[in-house]
Length: 99
Image 1: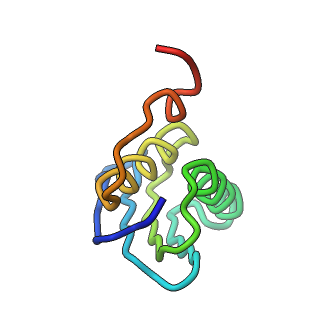
Image 2: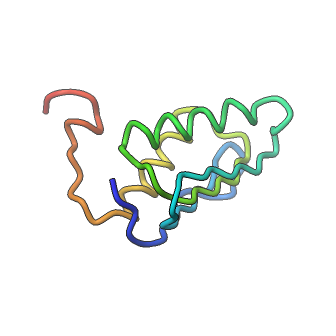
Image 3: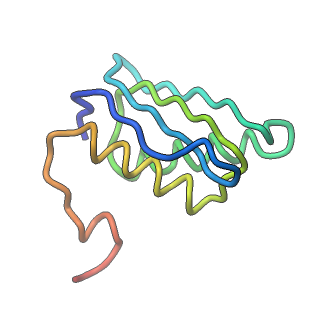
């Protein structure tokens, strides 16, 4: 998926994350986390896996994590990508099954 404009999803509340995505010439993920020492690598892995699953190959993704669980990180990344792209959403691919 092509990222054509900046977008943001999420909050800075405890247990959540803010994901900012902008067009970029490569895929770069920057994470700032209140739980960096314990879970920073896991946060980066979830973000990268979600981006790969959505077909995002070129974007600057900045995540400010306040202890979000995996499902919240995935949802925030998906929302930011959907807001930043011009392509229609293929809901079957996104939800992983038939409607």
